[in-house]
Amino acid sequence: MLMEADGEAKLLAGGQTLLPVMAFRLAAPAILIDLSGVQELKGISIDDTGVRIGAMTTWRDIEDDQRLRTAAPLVSAAIEHIAHYQIRNRGTIGGSLSHADPAAEMPGVVVACDACLEIVGSNGMRSVPANEFFLGPLTTCLSADEVLTAVRFPPWPATRLWAFEEFAQRRGDFAYAGIALFHETGATGLVENAHIGLIGATSVPRRLGVAEAALNGRRLDGETIAAAAQLASSEADAEDDIHASAAYRKALVGTLLERALKAAAERAEAL
Ligand SMILES: Cc1cc2nc3c(=O)[nH]c(=O)nc-3n(C[C@H](O)[C@H](O)[C@H](O)COP(=O)(O)OP(=O)(O)OC[C@H]3O[C@@H](n4cnc5c(N)ncnc54)[C@H](O)[C@@H]3O)c2cc1C
Image 1 (cartoon, rainbow, N blue to C red):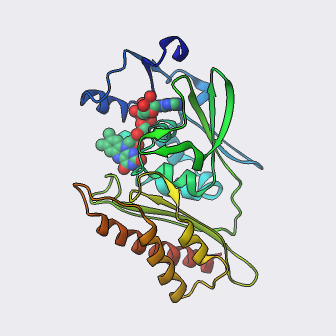
Image 2 (image 1 turned 120 degrees about the vertical axis):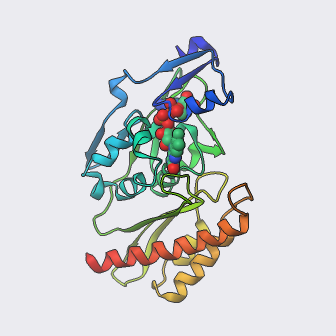
């Protein structure tokens, strides 16, 4: 149907973004293709290769799946910050990733976790790493005849340390900024494999590579945390908007990274 519509159709997932956009007359697709009856796009599977979440799986289904709290803890932790209960009943992970709002939580989480996006279109199937899927604000590599079918997360080691921190003016609002973080601690006690996903204070979901490099190979003491927070703050490409100034958001990124690193360290004590 997408191919026949020749760019005139839009896929409808839960409608939690598309319908408001249409109500504001920002989009007026001639044809809506409702995906809600496509069972193959729904569901969560977990095995040795990691976690696979179908594009039409709702936030609510993800929130309720207790297995994800250990198999993909950043996904579970992010959910409670996404919108409101009613919206989470209908909104889907695939709709959020396809919409590619840099202020949304899940794009930052999939980039932080090195997830892959599974896509089907007229040229067959392809799998795209999350950091290549998002091209800009509200822009992805999906072409007009392609459907996002699932997101696949690599296996999550039980000893991995992680934290999700964000700041929004009210619960359920889009965050001014957020951080999805994980790292490992080697036998030497030094940080390894730091991944920091940035939410909100950026034009495209991405990792903070400079701050990550400042953490890897270091002991996680006050000096390392302060240095990484300062680098993260400068690295965030926030812009002024009606909600907050760029300077405020950048400062917030540093503060949130500091909090996230401390929260992750507290998890180490509990292991
Ligand atoms: C008041 C309010 C507050 C919100 N707050 C937050 C928040 O804090 N954080 C957050 O992350 N989100 C928030 N949202 C958005 C919410 O999370 C939506 O669930 C999410 O945007 C996706 O909506 P949906 O699944 O209903 O997709 P739809 O609205 O149906 O579709 C969204 C877009 O994706 C396309 N699409 C959908 N599925 C696919 C697919 N499988 N393949 C290709 N393209 C597809 C559609 O064509 C459309 O362009 C909020 C929404 C509202 C209304």
